[in-house]
Length: 134
Image (cartoon, rainbow, N blue to C red; front, side, top):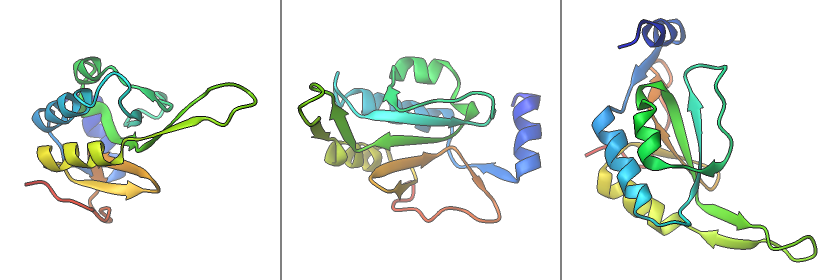
């Protein structure tokens, strides 16, 4: 493990709940949802690196190194802008996302309408999971 990651984890009391294999399986499953698949946001361990809500290039997501991801939020509802005078079209990815998460067997939580997959959690106060890994 990269020394910078180890120092950050130790300072915050974080422990790993995912490995590269599970991240890869998850990314491959989410990639199969399709071209207009769900939007996602990543929280990196490095506070200087930020991610907004966007379509993720899942193969690149794995190449970047999931050991740097504190968590991934996969957004169930996608809004498609259709014009200033027309309300956005809504695409609901909830069933496809949940099927993917259950098939891969990764621990996740719900944060509003989003699915949060944890890479690291606080060992003193772990999240409440909807699903635990197999």
